[in-house]
Length: 342
Ligand SMILES: Nc1ncnc2c1ncn2[C@@H]1O[C@H](COP(=O)(O)OP(=O)(O)O)[C@@H](O)[C@H]1O
Ligand code: SF4
Ligand SMILES: [Mg+2]
Image (tube, protein in one colour):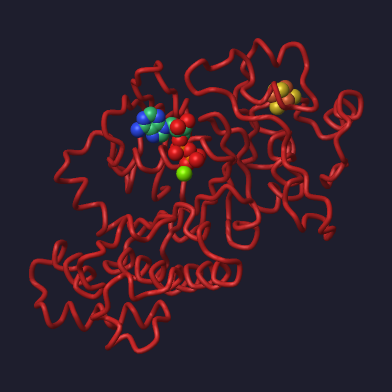
């Protein structure tokens, strides 16, 4: 059984400008101990999907299912959900200050987190655990730094402290939403490595959310590509990078600086994502797709199996057989051939 199984999740917000359709039928699974990468440009619905699952989107209209260890998080009471959050699912965000309170010492915050979920543990034991956790995430002199305030930590150290707090209760799942986006490249790599090491040590499953496919290139087992609130493609990591089907995935890959070993070929996808309020009919990527066909503009493709590989799904009208697809692409597109089947 999957640890987390999200089925046909819809999330919308009523605003003065109209109804924002942030997530329009997203489904994905996370297996125990595995890493799922969720990737897509800003605004594609990555954060809203995971925050909704954890009961953190206020005032949203929500539909669908999110089965965690077989129980639906979307129908749980607030109290039950608080028990899951932190204890069974840890969360880290781009901005550590959204989780670390500036007025309290880092160690105190970790201690409180532990004591919230473990009523038996003494303050001294929780503090000892907090020091161990800070050591685990590579904070130097953790027995002293435990009494620092968040502002006394560097950005990278704050991110580590937040990870320590998220891992405090040994959760089965860690949701990391753009955890390295605000960090410089060297620190980014260190933080990713650390998450990976903790995951192996504790058998934690991870959802790693990013706008940058490069971040998940080394760590994801499976990848979900989101666009316009929908899953566009889903596959294992190798398939995503080498034998993708969807033109949006291709666009994301082409905008990676080092893709194909050629540092100069950085091409952002031209155009902008569709409005989440006036959602266009047809494929949400149609306005930007180099392979767009007439039917794309009016008919929304469904997420369907790609013929060649198990568990590979794509939402696109291009043929699902690689030979036919390549022929169609050659006829329609002027894009660089770069997939394995090119
Ligand atoms: N509370 C809210 N009210 C209205 N719209 C929202 C709210 N939160 C998010 N959105 C919108 O939902 C869409 C998806 O947002 P988000 O999940 O944060 O994107 P991502 O994390 O992929 O960058 C965006 O268009 C965003 O503006
Ligand atoms: S359905 Fe059409 S517009 Fe959408 S990604 Fe596929 S080819 Fe492009
Ligand atoms: Mg986000």
